[in-house]
Length: 247
Image 1 (cartoon, helix red, strand yellow):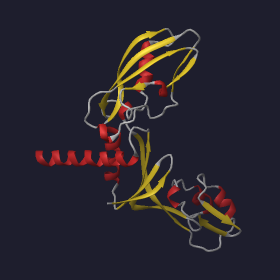
Image 2 (cartoon, rainbow, N blue to C red):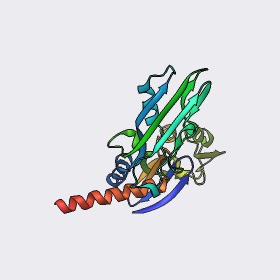
Image 3 (cartoon, helix red, strand yellow):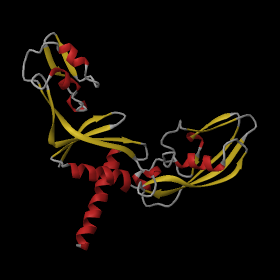
Image 4 (cartoon, one colour):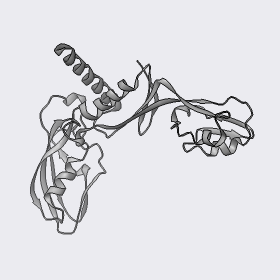
């Protein structure tokens, strides 16, 4: 299998060449359920005079993505402290960590709005886990689809502008009687076939490459996409090794 980088923005898109659907799904499941990250698991609340129940506050803290550098892998637990007085909007960035590298991945994430006179004091302890234990440990949103194949057999297409306007992801260029795919946009096709349904397959045909898969990863911030992918592959290798030893 050959991996090629297609796009690196808010989410990363990879092109998996020579990859089966089974393999793509195995990687997806390994990312969602098998990659270990840190998350807040134990919360000790010393003072809470806000209107938010302790249980709700603890649940909110548990869902804050915590940066999990590869360098801290295998180390123990980390402590994050919070002590604030209202009026104030308390954000994830207000959590003070015992390690400068283990901090909230989304600093602007709102925890609670404290009114005048309300106060909050607590300690939150992280633990290691993966998505198989709880979804709060899952490091990313992951999806995949076949690499699209668009065929436009005729050089002249009547109503090209109308056909292009039907594309929901705007990858078609229709000028006068010329219809084409915009440069570098082919991988963004979502295979909806809106253009084909309107114009007919003899004008534009939408299909897919069966041995090429677009693989999308949107990290929540605990790990970089590269580390997420590598950790998932390592997890799969360990599982295959374990199975082969038991057979």
